[in-house]
Length: 518
Image 1 (cartoon, rainbow, N blue to C red):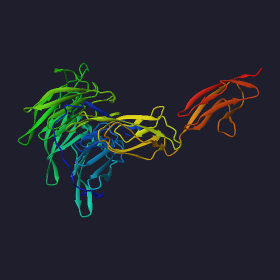
Image 2: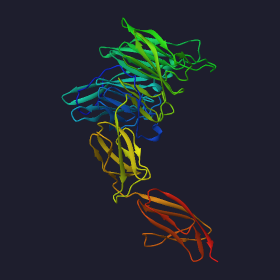
Image 3: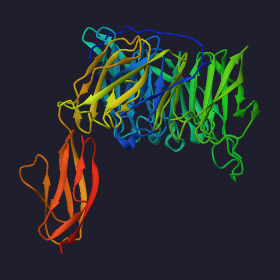
Image 4: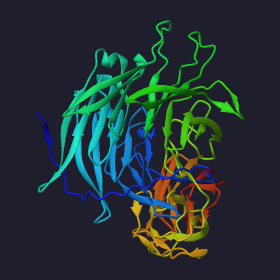
């Protein structure tokens, strides 16, 4: 019996692109993502049309990538496989809450629509691994040893998702069955890395049948090789990461191996294995194979302990060592753990997301953030570009943007937003109009008062009544305020005599020390 799940109607149009390059990754761009702090391990996925980092979608505009929708979902997983994007479909998992959301892009109105929210509280860590396309969604719950498969169907009433199958195996929760999932063609791959196994399923009628078990278990070892911690398939190749395959039980050697299988006569056979390298020489990795991605001509394997990504290219039916991608400036501390590739780009996640791709022509964009009174606002956040930028003490921001970039910029200072500033396609270095906040920000002057017992009066420019404080002074003043703050007393004199501020643009800390008047 199918469990019926309602959905919104969307267009089924999809665009598929293909290619084989990753030679130029010189354009390194940070992508700002706004999620709760506890969800710092942001998963990533990318195809040739869209990318996703946690819940932030980016879109390919041909010559460059730009921010798209922020999906109303939280991405929080430990595996790094908690999002997937493909053919205008996106899936985002929050496995601690056992919740998964699926979205579809409508090519008619160019918007993302939420199709379904799936909550499975009885399946522990439902969403640690996910896959989606325009027909299927696969969700792994490895702590429950279960994989749930959903089918998408369209009819006159719109689009519906239904639960199509639940897959389990003996000792599935002990082996963490469902830790990694992928689908390629007719084959569905499900790993159980604590059992050093990967299960290959195919659909027969309405039933998913196990067609093959890739078993890499070594009975001489107490600890597993973590075979299946990560996996990715493309056409007739399947790469499986075993990030403890070179490790000795006593810990004297650490490292992993990626095993590459090739489909021949309907079966997946081990074709070759690859290891980390530097300048052509094999080295010991720290967590080689923690994550990996492959396409027709490239296999990228991450090692987040070494903070490196190793690239292999396919030549004449064999995967050859190519080059090592070092962690660039701004990369997260676990660079190599969250990675995804398409034809030309490498997308990395974690606490700091980076998009790496071919060099593009850029122009310098400069602007200011001001308040409604026209005063500049320092430390305001300007959003709308791939990476947020912050205004300096003069209220100015500057960024290099791709030639032809267009979009909407907004400013924010703490909780105060701005109206959007529409930017026309950029053809040259340009000074933009000011971004104006909706309200005048307030800044604080905090100060300690010593040498005086009892309250002290402070005369503040623009205040009709003095401010009275004891031991500690705290005054809120509007952005752009100019004037002086002067303590007054019949019994004491103060050092300094007063605090003078010109065009206040940030919080200030001061102190006043009183001494008795002779």
